[in-house]
Length: 138
Image 1: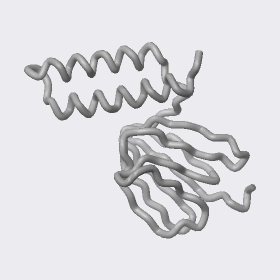
Image 2: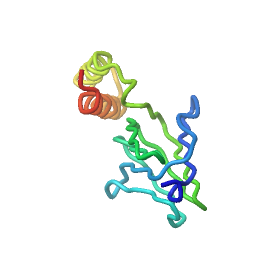
Image 3: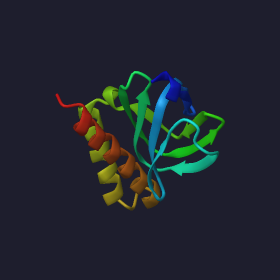
Image 4: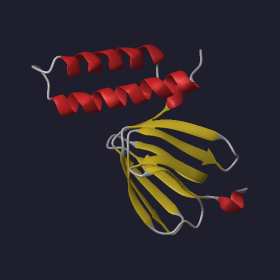
């Protein structure tokens, strides 16, 4: 299905997460999940914490956990500028559970940490844990 492909780049502050040809890109937006296909109209959107799915040109789906960012679509090129974005297959379930517990405890201990930062950390940790449990069945 190469005739349905377009160029996608996922870029985080630390590195280029993905760069290549894909059939689709699906991400969580403020109004719900959205999908980008070839010949999509020009578009800019925020991306929320959640699951990002890339469908490769061979039909293989690759799942990523993101903490949000912005996506721009123009002339069959999609750029996702992500705060963080990691392949779900690379998430260590034990470390994800530990991270979730740390974030939960920080939110409970309101005297030591900024509550909003703690809440956001908990949402990110919960997302990573949920996706790791869903896709990385061991």
